[in-house]
Amino acid sequence: MNWKRALIAATAAIPLILLLAWGFSRNPGDIPSPLPGKPAPLFALGVFAPGQPPLERKVGDTLRLEDFRGKVVVLNFWASWCLACREEHVALSDAARRYTGKPVQFLGVLFNDRAPPAIDWISEMGGQSYPSVMDPGAHVAVDFGLYGVPETFFIDVTGRVARKQIGPASDVVLNHVIDSLLAAGAQTPVAAR
Amino acid sequence: MRRLLGAFLLASSLHAQTPPAQSDSALDARTTKLALQLRCPVCQGESIQESPADLAKQMRDIAREQLRAGKSEDEVKAYFVSKYGQYILLEPKPSGFNLLLYSLPVVLVLGGLVAVTLAVRRWTAQPQES
Image (tube, rainbow over all chains, first blue to last red; front, side, top):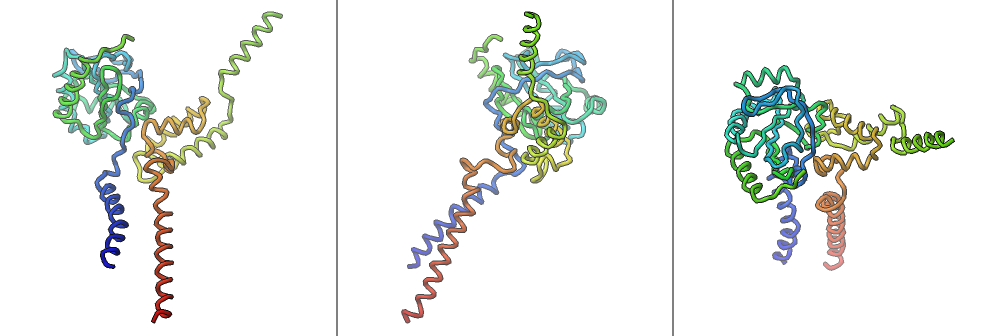
């Protein structure tokens, strides 16, 4: 009977169509990160770009993630050769200034780049309010599962990765994520180190 | 004698903490074998062994360092999976949703065989009925 054939054809075709629809709705370039919800990989990296007062750190100082426990950490991987990093630069630098005095630490991590062009890039962009560190051998980048720049990781007050932003971070995303992590952090007692 | 025994015990404990030495060529071979199984995250379907990308080279170096430090190939693979997810494996494990990927071709071939068998039976049965 015709309706039987139609039923068999639909039973065979619908799962395939759903599977294809699911596949086409995904960006094959996006790699889902297993990090959100897990403790952020620890690091100790040297400052090469100091940032500006009051957020500046001395060039050569070692910054450790553990030192920022109790703060929301905004970890931005960037490079001077990265065009999309230009898009988010002002938003990040302004946001870092706006959250001065609150438990928020912005930190830039240079990815596959050298300090001289990166420093030139910062001056060309009108400065960077927060410090940036070098990541020799991309060890920290790989620890964070990085596959391109810019990528920004939001780490909560307990040291867990709360969110990964792939591509340029906007004002709206920065405000929304940082405010919600600060609000959550106010209710979370941070264990003493 | 006691000093000699102390020195011997110290040497034994140091030896226990140091991963077994391996020649550079053996380490290279293990790194290459492992790197061929890991996907380069900034390339299209290439392994980190085949890709000339900076990140692929850095990942090869990290794999090599971890193997040199005494980690097994499975442990190094688990490290990369913990950072990039199953995506990083060029051959994902046949479990969970991946199972569908492995089983779908078999299911389709079996389904095709059943359909062909039924069709052939029908075609061969028709002349006898008429």
